[in-house]
Image 1 (cartoon, rainbow, N blue to C red):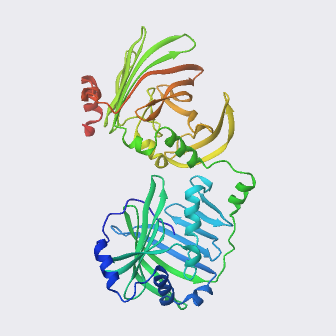
Image 2 (cartoon, rainbow, N blue to C red):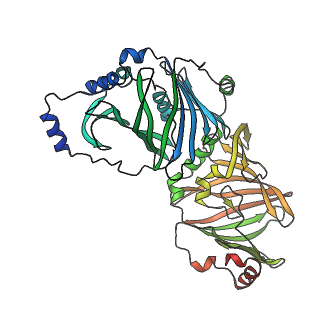
Image 3 (cartoon, one colour):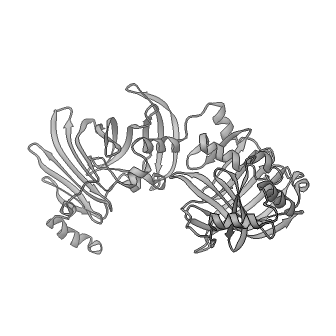
Length: 487
């Protein structure tokens, strides 16, 4: 089944009975049912095993709408077969398809192209592909067991553990399914997903849920089965893109490559904890061997300050208090800008400070990503990835080391007074700091000039004086004239 994301709130209007109450209730019954009794009863009241086994294919049209404003959050058509082959065609929230064919789990999206699922994600896809599981539960869940009694959605229910991460609750009175819950994978790890049944429909002699209060993580929505049909087989096979990908022993999906870099540099949790940064560095102009001292501070809320001191040229500064961004130099004087200027993918100016929200939420900055090929750069075997910004800017190319998973080189546009110039950045060295791997040696090339950026000190999550991000007096005056609405 296809779900949306956010974390589920506790509740569902159920009160879990204590172990003592559960034990007492079971002991008081004439006969304690087994999981087999409960599941067989469910199969019986929904149509019977014989009826279920006449169904070899199922097609469902699904629609999900948010509870708060009734907006459409899910639109999909799913096809399942008793053999375990399946395909889901999704229109909302992102157009694409995913499925299982002959044991291979795959996904195709307009955002990142073809992706073959592996490991836990593949196991989850294989398990969820068996949606015609009524009547087959013994082969699919041979270790199903009764966990006890619970009150769920106002009904007294048997809780059955189908697998380590899949649970179902059945109404004692009717034998019908009341609630289903499972753990599913997401970009932030495992999350709870499932539904409670609000309405049933009888179709061709079989009863199935037709209206459900569904959730994935915290996000709740109402899931409606618009239409169900059986035994109208869809040719279930690899889509053309997947078949071509497999025939050519395709490259890793771009999403996997980028997510691996995030994981190798500390992981999502480390970036979420990233509050402040102070980077002390030296910037060397290779052709003249002249060196500038660079100090960079950054904090949550878009706050940023950087100073660059060139011998004989004075100090160049730029910064932002989170609302107004500015810069000041001996040659050009002070100027203000409406918002902090970023490349939209996590790097800000020379100091390579990183805004955690942009690093973690990189998908929101792009319209698509693609793995274009493999290249060897300076002895590093790399995957070449193209990133297409949502703002319509120039595509960015990145090369990720296939051995370490770390970003090795990137090309990106650099905004200057002379216009936008292409820049190449090579990340030659990373260093461990506060549980993260931080780039500390970068080689930059732009307009025929080569620069070496060497970091001597990285301080993460340490206190930073508020005055560091305050607007200088002359910048405040300029901002009051040019940007009065921001002050």
